[in-house]
Image (cartoon, rainbow, N blue to C red):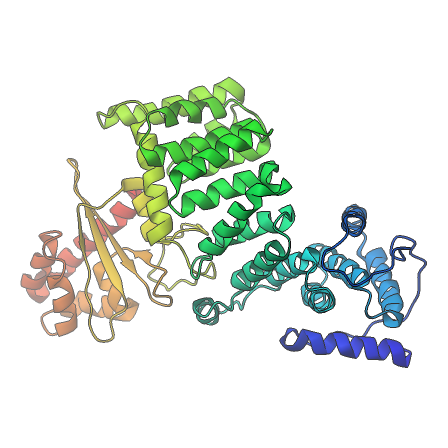
Length: 496
């Protein structure tokens, strides 16, 4: 390795910092006409149209390649050229996007390399949007720690992958308000955030883009509508979705997003738009309809949905929702409106902060949701509980119990947040709040000699008579009543 090339790699490693040192690269050279552009990078306050076009052409060319050996060979050749021309911003941008492609194909540590190249590019040309855009993609790819506690701490302080990514996308939109790619990713990243959500920044950037050519880009309008709705600006969201349809957006998706928003506004027309959009067969729209349905539908209903198309799909959905309306003496479309009300309430109150969920032995239910904790899943299916209870005490994890009054027998759900205070998981019995060992021990000894268990039971006495019976049963009857209480919780989970 030449001294010049070694110096380039040392400089790149220094830029990576906490990302880790760059691994040793095998020397080699390959003729790459695609990389050696006749356009010389020059200092300017805005990235030229021809430079942007060249980057998109380069991205298209490498996206068509799946052979990682060829791409790695290309990377070594580009780095050799960059060694002699370290201040060429376009070379760093190309290398950054090449690293992203390698990372997407599964080559290790390429997200770190990409981030380092994009950071270099933003230092050279801070007013170019593509450097910040690439950095946003790379930061999201670098990701977070697999230890949920560590991820939670980073998230609290805005140092998690989504926050870093959102900051970079926001910068790309700031230096160029008409940069559609950055606006779209800023909106999407903002909608994925669980805490430290930068709704105001995303909303300001999207609204500012309205006076630029980006304001007529369908995907920008679609994402703006979603952010407007998340911020509570329902009328503005509806206007964005209408504009999305006018400029040629996907009809099914536009009608569905409009229907979701109209439902939150309480409009009876939401059911009509919802069914009208279900007729369209484009994959993106179908996936959105199915995702909404899967939140509450049984497996057999989801399978029936998958076997329908066009007007059949709309008819199936009409029957699905109206059957629930009639079972609860509602007008047609009311259950759909309630579904979206519950969905957005759950987003605000029961969203998962981290998807790195870990389960204790007593936490046997697995929702597989990446969006909501188990309270959110139950809320989506059953709505507001008839009654709630919780208990706060020393050495007791955060806990809640919900009761739903029903003519054929109440449902009672118990939740505990053992490792992450914002991730409540379902457990079968109130005693599981005390841990598996304690729950097993109490079956044989009763609760009278355990003040903590007694206080926990007292906090739930208004939910069901069973909690009073357990306290008064003594050792002789404690097994029977504790088994009955656990059976009630298990049955509730099965029906829930």
